[in-house]
Structure formats: C-alpha cells, structure tokens
Image 1 (cartoon, rainbow, N blue to C red):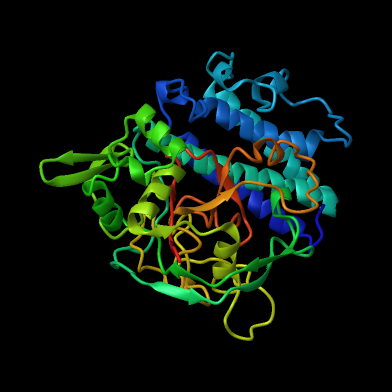
Image 2 (cartoon, helix red, strand yellow):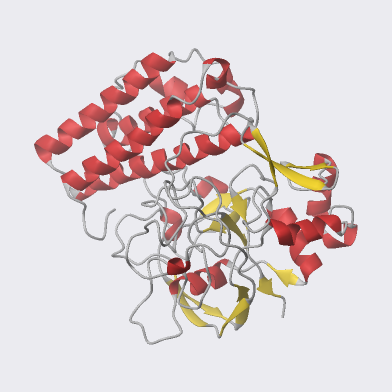
Length: 432
C-alpha cells in the first residue's frame, strides 16, 4: 500500500495529534442546536461528523484485521451510528448520537490507543498507510466542518492566521507549449489515494492559461452583463440547474443599492474585488467561460501547468514551486491567512510557467468528469473514489481551509457540478 518512504512513528504521532487539535478547535465552535443543525443534503450534523472521524480512525487503525474482518469497537453500536457507507444521510439527524462530551471521549480514547500502539510497536508500512489514511480523512472532514459553518451562516470558526493577503490583481496568461505529460502519482510518492494511481502518458496540446484564478471583479462583470439571464451562455444541464435554483448570482452575494456584498460565515461584507471568486459551481464557471470566450482547463492541462517546467529541470514537481513542503510564503493553506487572499499574493508559490496560487486559496474546477486512471485498482477504503466516478467533476489545488500535508499537484478533489457550497473557484484557458 505504501510504496515510498514510511514515516517514522514520531512523525505519524505528530500528524495524528495535529489533526485532532484542529478537530477539537472546530468542535468547540459549535454550540447548542448547532451540533445538529438543519437537515440539508449538503452537510452532515456536526455532532455526527465528529463521531464519524473517531469511528473512521478506530476502524482502520485499531479494528481492521484484513479481508473485511473487524475487531469490536470501543463504542458499542458505533458501526450503526457512524459507518457512512451504510447509514443513510437523511437518517443522521434521527440517530441516538452520544452527547458532545461522550463523543469527544470516544475520539480521545481511540487516539490514545493508536498512539500507544505506535509507541510500543512502531509503524510498519501497512500501519503507516492506515494512520495516514485516517489523518487525511480527518483533515478533509475538518475542511468540510468549516464550509458547514459557512453554509449554515454560523460565525467563522477559529482559524490561526498570519499574513495580510491584500495585494491586488494578477492578470494575464502564460503560454505552455504542451507535450507529453506523465500524469498522476508515481509509484514511490508515498501515501496517495487510489484515484491518483498511477502515472500514465497523456498528450497535451499547446494552451494559454490564466496566471491567476478568476476574481470577484471579473465575475461581477459577468453578473452585471446579465450572465444569469442569458440562456445562450449556459449548457442545457446548467440552465436547468439555474432555473431550479433561481440563481441570480453567486450563492452568498447580495446587492445593497449600488454596492455588492457577500456573506462570509455570519457576517455581511463588502465584496473584495481582487480575491478569487468562490462558492460558484461547475455550471456557473462554464457559463462565465462562454461569456468571456474562455474555457476551463482540462485536468491534464492543470497538472502540466502545476507540475512541469519549461526548463531542463529533472523530473516533475510535487508542488508548483518545487518539492519543498508548503509554507506561509508559498500558499494560502490552513493557518496562513484564515480567509481568501488577493490573487497577486504568494509569488513564491508560482509554478515554473508563472501560474500563481495553483495550490491554496480556492479549489479550482476543471473541465473533466471524475474518472479512474488506466489500470485503476480500488484501495482498502473502497468507497473513497469508485462510487463517484462519472457523476462528479474534478477540482484541483486546495483552498485556504485545506491542511498543507494533504495537498500536492496530483491530488484530485471531486464534487457534483451543482455544488456551490464548497470553497471552489476556477481559472480559465484561452479558447483557441
């Protein structure tokens, strides 16, 4: 399962504690009725989601005995509460969930057991794989809990933040000559998800890609030019979605006299013009592109712009800037700004071609449907990718709420094309 270097027991313990610290920080931000919240298709009850994170860690790090066999849970009846593959989404508000105190106790007990095992026995490659699977799963759910607070209009969660991200626009395109891309993760990259496996050749034609994601300023021009009323800009599926949603602009935008505003968690703010547009779905991104005479990049184009180089650099890059891990100068990931930064920020994170913020700030929709790579083999967590092939669209690059350890150039996110509650925007390519 792990084909690259195995992290040490100490490194794995640090990852486990770090992910759990963020979980506890977010858990404390939900109060009273917010722990269940309203029944919506887009979110889970936060109390259920917290318990599910503990269940998943226990399921793979303590209970898994291979070939579908499981040891008993620390919490009697946990599978009937938290197994997301078996518990219908709409039923999660009706379950007899443990209290927040008991749920956090369950999480603490499971983490202690995993850490004790690491201290006593170290970590073989299989155990290291499952620990990382649990850590990254927790990272993803913590990002989901963050956008749950936005969806429900709760106050912003506590997020450590540093630099000011006000830097202005970053217009223009870069030219990329194309060529053969070895797309996907390499065999010795360490932990990767099954949908990234493995590298395979893809021929990419020449293309021009925007140096930065589309901004509020740019998308506002589309809105004010009647973009949400002009049928010719939308696909048939997109227009059906727009009519059903009665959308007149991005979901959290409103107009107050001559001023456009946006709801940021529980707070109404003036629309910051030079940050990437966010909370737009795939249909909205496509309609904007048609209006602007542009297009969304393919997955292969996105990965080529992020990972390859016009120079004679050996090999591919793990991140747009190289192989060094993300830091606060390179990307707006969790703990850097705490919100969106302007598109000109983080020049140290430019790709070799000059594309900025391909990692961090906002997830970026691509043109492609989520499909398996050639030779796909499902990983032990069978429901991570395979059930969603052909029905979802691919996003790349992470956002301001993404854990830095989670993201890399080959990482594939995926949502259905109507979703506009997630922290997603897009960049464009010339439509030649």
